[in-house]
Length: 292
Image (cartoon, rainbow, N blue to C red; front, side):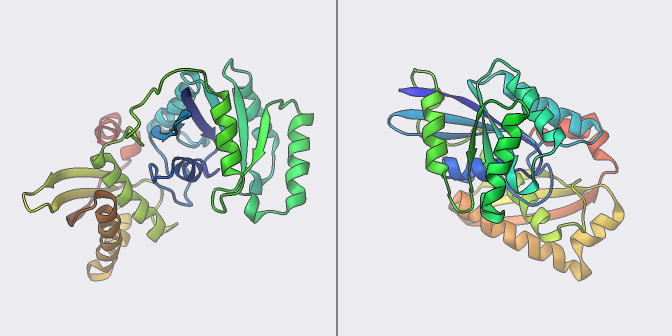
């Protein structure tokens, strides 16, 4: 049997989480059009009789200052050091810049074997793929490049087979019935955050966090979930709540439905919105939120 750990690295919004979800066959990471939707390194496990692939989905590489961003960038770099293989995910639709080449070569220069998943080929001209691959090779990128579309499932099996063949020989590193290392409580917080990011788009900036106050299953099987939605400004709070509470009711309803699907049980959800100014640069707040 072949098994090992694969760090999934790349710029923000390159499609890392979507690709991991498709490869694993389960939703282990939330997705949205906003940069750095993924804040934690999240493990997704694909187990087959012949191999086991343990993907470590990392926060997107994004130029931004601040305490939270520093933690996220460290998580990506640390993940690349402690794995058997690096899968660098590049957004083909956005082209190939000099910065992209430098970033790819940074990870290629490490001792860890690497390949590139060139994503989103379903929304770009086909002739661009060959041009970009040529440009990468001409600029010193020597690793394998595999064009894929997670949304259309194009070349996903090819990528899976390629990765399985790169894994070292050995027993499973994770129990075969596990698909993620994250708890139900963590995933509930992420589901709530995902629905907010999708509903409010650019109205509310990326600085949203979720704090779970109560996560309990009652004797009747219903989950009692009470959570706080943290934002950074009073006007963000007003947008999240909406006129006469309409916005928070709508997004909470969408989130509750997704939570029930994930948990396989009814959910009684209570949500509150509170302001914590500049929480992303407050180490105590960040650590409390990341401890979910």
